[in-house]
Length: 76
Image (cartoon, rainbow, N blue to C red; front, side, top):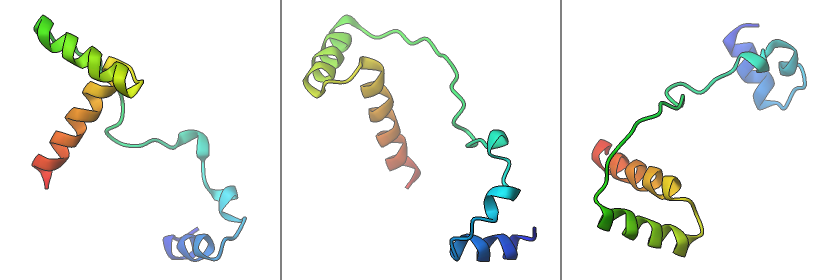
């Protein structure tokens, strides 16, 4: 299926596009996780844990959220 035909079928809500999409092979670029280790001073960990508890989320989630927000500001 050509791109124009796919776009038209999608815009029209056609069920035909399911037949041409390989759903099991889809991926989102640059979202693969890579484990890193980082050392924080104790005061920073305590502050992170306190804020994470206040928000009801894990420490890792708050670190990722804050980093993503900051990197988004830098990119714009």
